[in-house]
View 1 (cartoon, helix red, strand yellow):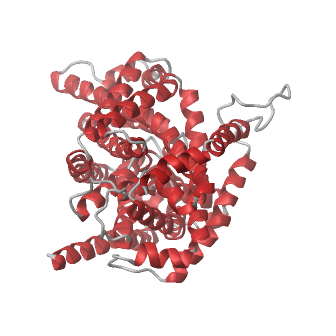
View 2: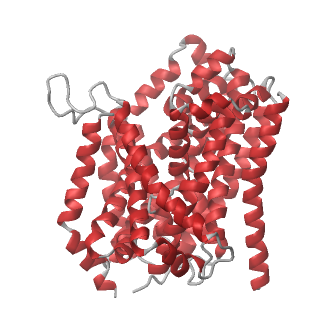
Length: 35
Length: 502
């Protein structure tokens, strides 16, 4: 894989998968606080 | 009157939202587009998640949560008695999809059977799919042609899919929908991870990722890629379908809107990326060369899934197992999306005073009857896919119009911000919704102007070209029929689905 494709992969996965994990973690934290 | 049933906790509704969104489109359309157009498509697809899908999903979620009614009742409650026909259009449009979507689930079962049969033959030392393809290179094309047109077994499997779905839903929200998604969604993610690891371990597997993530800046000036990115986001997240409205009508009274919507939107996109990273490396690794791989990706959803992938998987020793895993994942994705579509039907019928069981039986009968032509004829299936697929943009616009009529700013304060653990800026919600009115209208105009049929409006003899699969005449006629029926029964809809519930 070329360097630019690797960089693009990191950014896109970081934004989408990172976003999913971030919001999921935030929800888990909220649920724990409510308990 | 509010519904007594509700999800047991936040995770019940989050899993239901993910199950609704992650469907066949994640596995058979997204990887094709990502492989063809690469990183430019992915950037636009993320852009439209933020601009089109998330604001619409937030609106839908909060409408369902507030009114706790089926789509017709909830939409009419917000939009007012003169616009009840809008709720009817959204419902009918999604049901138009549900009727043929059950056929996709039936196809998935059929190919899962084929994959299991092949695995059995492989383990038992009998003639495998690979041997059959050596004898007849057209074997899989003939197989697909056989099952997609006039096949009794396809019809039986399609009916079974509807019955299983209805059986799950008769058990209620917590014991049925919630329990099924607790099994389906984690299993689906695990299966996608397994396929990704196996695909990437193939020689040249990483070449698929190179195509997927390379950004060709020339693509940003190609209107087709913008349209493909927008339609993929709209269809895949379920924004504008009325499904999120249905799911959230079973939410707890103080359920979070924004955070749950964002988990659903980003979770769906994560599943799409995983599916592309599972399929593209395998397609590139197992094709003879790059040109052949690209031509496979351009061949369409059905061809890629039902003829090319089984053929490619048959060419290497672990392919028999990989094929079983792939079609199991495909079935799970399709089935998890079919469930909320059927629930949308049941939910509206229950608002008419029926019990869950009574509504479920009627939903099953209607689904089987109206889906039958799609199970029997691929042309009919493709026509319905085309008509109601574009119709979803109208559904999305109807929801946006209802919110703008109420006042987007006020809607955000009254409907979304309450109970939300996360808030979005007011400007983001108001501006994107307003912008989306133009975007949706342009999208419909663009599709109509492309001329997907040889004779979009009138056939060669000058007659209204109603029976062409992809003609504008067919699209407009079916939409108009729904609108006329909706307007005709508008008063009845408001009285039955809203007034009697107050």
